[in-house]
Image (tube, rainbow over all chains, first blue to last red; front, side, top):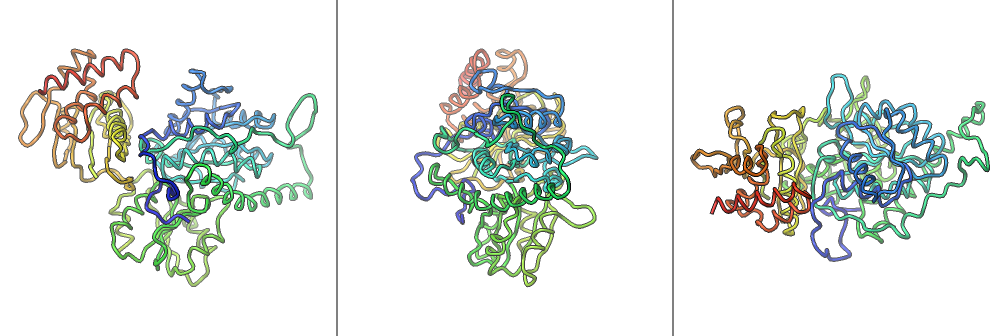
Length: 378
Length: 165
């Protein structure tokens, strides 16, 4: 597990050749997508996702991204196009935010139920009404039960790396994956990040065991009676649990090949060795939390960042909290009528002796400032 | 760590200026982070963009609350908002007490025909503060722009340097 200060992945084994140049998050993501060679990219523009799709459209126009590029008439259609294409055995990509993800909701379950390993970047943004274009996690939290893997990134480097990992993970366990990046606070950031140049021997071409093919007709997603439906759903659940092992394995494989890793792939801990209290959080705000922890000498606070929210890394979380007496869970989403999603799941996972407190921070783009974090870490 | 806020109006290139600054600093082997404070985007509306430059990886991702420098692309912003920084660099013909000033609009009107002052003000910023070198600013422009836009921006930076000296 990573305990170093950099959220740029562990770099202990090799000396850095040089500090990588600054690149925008949207460009870094688009470059990762290009390397993964999707056959179909379908999307509908929505702030703050737009820049990512613009970069891909530019690459397509410049003929350096060889794919079918579809400007869909809605997000529902964009994901439907990816589902259809993926079912014929093609690798696909889409990206969205907020209302766009909400409009895709119906199709999210079709993609996961058909076991299509589509990769989608979600630039996290608050849901309407009232309209708000800024970051919180209400969009992806509202689709946490849709059978998609969910990864939350902290830096531009991690967003770039996670897109690549997501394809490998998704295609290994046959589940679709959401790569979540905080809207604006990550999606619009330009910072130092090293781009991967080639994926040879890391991501093989997508070859599904079965696909829609007119010369060998099959039916997928047809009506099933109760006894079989349950069987299908249990298989999805099994795949989710299997994904935990796969994610760890691919995290290690990635580290071996590209000299970067993010905790054990599921969770990352920071300053936890001697900590009595831990903050648990998701996404880019974890950098600012690390910054504040670094400022305070001899603080009893550490950080546990869940890189992976689906599958929920319960075992890893319990192990990380072995010597922890109190946890402070930061949510950027509300579960109306019952607190907050991350808090509820952490509370249900940790043993009763650990006190669990819930905090709502950064809702609708409220800045997660060092001052706010300092108030938590008194 | 050096923290810089760029104040401009929609269309003046404040967001791009922050990105150019970060790219230029990274070309000098520094860590840099740039991002905009987005509001409802309209031409002419006040825009803020942030840039941090450091010798170590930058963990802080919040807005900038205490800036070392503020680069003000439009002097009229001084009347509408409270701009605070240890040192200001303002695009104006006037002399302002305790601030760096530079008339970037005249150069922009001559070269671009409209008040796009971002690269010109970065040239002035580079000259006054030495935070980034002229060489890396030009390099960052070459990486960011192409064609006639690049040509004009390179000319604008050179022109700015000539005028300051």
